[in-house]
Image 1 (cartoon, one colour):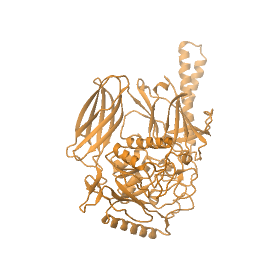
Image 2 (image 1 turned 30 degrees about the horizontal axis):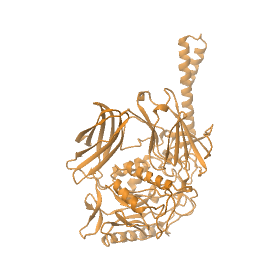
Image 3 (image 1 turned 45 degrees about the vertical axis):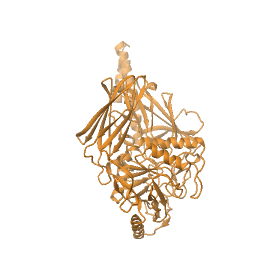
Image 4 (image 1 turned 180 degrees about the horizontal axis):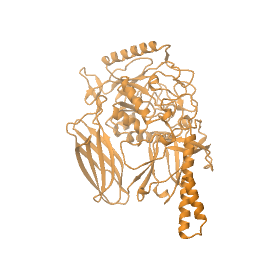
Amino acid sequence: MIEIKGQELTEALSIAPTKLNMKIISLSLATAVQLLAMSRILAAQETWQPAAGPLKTRWSKDVAPAKAHPEYPRPQMVRKDWLNLNGLWDYSITARDAAQPESFPGKILVPFPVESALSGVMKTVTEKDRIWYRRSFQTPKKWSGQRVLLHFGAVDFEATVWVNGRPVGQHRGGYDTFSFDVTDALQKSGANALVVAVWDPTDAGPYARGKQVRKPDQGIFYTACSGIWQTVWLEPVPAAHLESVKITPDIDRGMVTIGVKARSGPGQTSVRVAVYDGRKKVTEGEVSSSVAQDEGTVAPQISLAIPAAKLWSPDSPFLYDLRITLAKDGQRTDEVRSYFGMRKVALGKDEQGITKIFLNNKPFFMVGPLDQGFWPDGIYTAPTDAALRYDIEVTKKLGFNLARKHVKVEPERWYYWADRLGLLVWQDMPSGDRFIGGRDPDIQRTPESAQQFEAELKALIATHFNHPSIVMWVVFNEGWGQYDTPRLAQWVKQFDPTRLVNNASGWADRGVGDVHDMHRYPGPGSPPPEPNRAAVLGEFGGLGFKVDGHTWAGKTWGYRGMDSVPKLTRQYVKLLQGVYELKKSPGLSASIRKPPTSSMKATVCSRTTARY
């Protein structure tokens, strides 16, 4: 194709430059430039290879620039039109205070973090560095007249974004999604230049980082994740459009309440909601709001009865589908698809009068692994969506009904699979700042550190509110950055009264929240149930066993080493038997097993022998 266009261009240049010839020349030049750019992209894709990391998963072979997490990234608010920006980007690493570089000599596969093998880079960056990303994109012609939003699933930690040299926004926080309206920065035609600069201090600063450290050379802390690590994508929306959806089920009343936040100019705005059981429409309703000022925001909500509601549980993870339509002055402008589960989690008294965790108004014993969410080839980013699904499928096959997502937040699609397949989730807020011992008082954070932590905590809860799989928020873990615990536990409960709150998983319990959470290694153990709090075993086990060919480093680590599979099995059976005895007395409500640990630099974690 390039040769043919080149011939056309030569012929056009050999004729007198009439208007028609000049048009041909212009078209041929444009085509040649586009084809040259395409050929360079294809050539880069053909030569791209992951870095030579110490350990791969079975999905490493499925990763390629043309199919880097191609799935729609936001399953709970789906629109038809979107453009995935994952793939090969140009990158450069400079000093933190350096200006934007003139050249970007390397290629990186987004959305994998710089430290990962699947990024193709696998380099260490520090608090003294800044990562620069660059790529071009063109918006489809059919998007003309609409607003264009640029979405980032997550970038660790501080991201500054330019489009065509124009700053469009900055975001701080390594775990939450963010978006910018880039419409006014776009070219009227042709390619647009997107540049993203990222600074990530990891454990050199007080910010939320979970188990990331700059020097992962021992124990239970792992490789850092810097830069873009979730999907980047573009989405067109009309001027009057839906911004967010909040879904609150109420199984006691057989109702669901849908609240929306919409961007709308002056006039009459209406929202229609339809609930489906497969293709069958269950119910629908409409609510209207009047907007008086330009670029106003409306937040209507509507409650709908769900007759003979099918309840969501790990044994029967039934999901209703939603269609939400926005109309402005009687004309439909926007529509999104979503889903929800009719599910309730609360405390209650069992037949012996012991405070227990109840699911759908019945005592429900929760048991699951401490899921830390690191991948040896992608670090924070799973190699594929199939890998995310497999992780949850295997968790259930191993007999668990729960995963504690430990000091990490996953991409939305992980929670989608938990919702779809039926896995309960305790969601930790990633930790940061200084540690304290079990007998120490809460730390005093700086105002800046506290403000950033609370902004990220609020974003975590708000953006994950609709997932029926999530049943508990864990504010702190083992005194990691723990401060002002009673106030924050109470605030979380007020912000989301539909879920349980764990004030501190581990040794720094402050007597607040819905559960008293003990850690005991190897265990098991149980705190006594209280009149207003259930007893849970937030961590136990931690037996270490090396599986050749399945470890990141030569050394392995665990609270207690095992020298054979039979011995490992016997010990875990013994531990689990103890757990179920504690369920009977004193009345344990849940247990979280720390899986066999087999890595010192990146956890090869949650199900060591099952994942690879």
